Image (cartoon, rainbow, N blue to C red; front, side):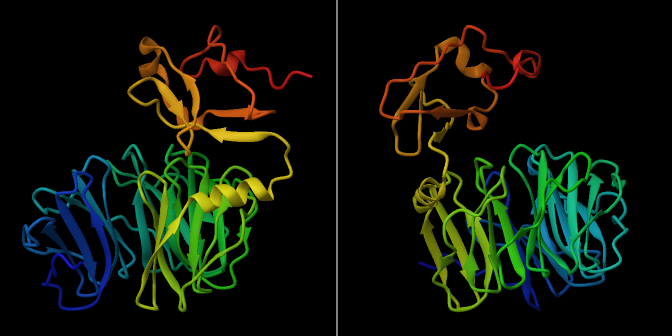
Length: 341
């Protein structure tokens, strides 16, 4: 059901995004402006944000919602005050081609941009200074970019038909390019738990890769009749949503991804990835099965249970965890000695 139509731009709208609190929507247009809208009534909140001399191809909010970033065909990135609409600092310059995609790191400390100059650049979000050298490796335009949920990696999709994974701190390529699509990669995202990389392509498919190993999981998701221009995961990770030039939006059940992973694995061990403990203290898998219980005074100390993997040699047998030597923060690095023979 259509809720509202936001009118005001005079040319094509290339990018939209919600504010973190869900109260506002921003849009970037070929008319060279960014507009901020009230998400509930659809009214423009302020005058258009002007400054770019080329079409605005990508917009995004900072994680705290205080700032907006925009990438443009004028080869620059701009930062805006989300409340006042005022430009913050000078444009970020360095790319030699149109900036096709921009994103914030999860902690808001960095901005990453992808360009038609085939490079990715990282910027300090406070100073606007370039961080390190451009990330080079793609042989065609960079169309899409995203940080991993933990902020450790950056993924990029390109017209060279590949997805690349980069170390966010060093800028080094983490693995070989992920190859499988037969056309430009228009959009690429991480699943909310960071386990999967999900790109969409001009080849009309969506594919899924294991973010850690780079292995393809299952078969491509086929159903669109034209290029798949955009893909996103629901916040709970239960569904994948894709938009296509065939004028449709399709919703996919992500449970089939877990099935594909299990059926395609040659490892006899069963892997279960945990989520945050529920209010009752139980950590449950995606099927609501009980994995383990966390004592009340320990729950807040687990920084990210989603990163915890339990290997069950026999999933049907009871499993207990010994927290006697449980280490917090980075102390595990001094304790962990690798698998015991």
